[in-house]
Length: 86
Image (spheres, rainbow, N blue to C red):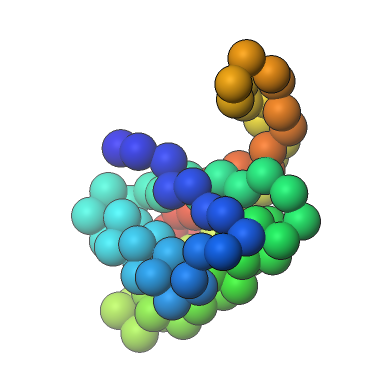
């Protein structure tokens, strides 16, 4: 399963649909963002995905964590949100 990567320009509804789809299929999703605007979009998408999944009977929990990611030879700190049914 791939990590859902979110940028500051990501469409919230599209990301939410991807999160909901992955959770339905795999019972687990990981959403990663770097930077304030990307994290903002990720949080909004997770909230929207929670609504989508609640309609299908899922009650999800979100676990945030810091991760180091290498981009163009430089290490950056990202926030990864683990999304799982409770």
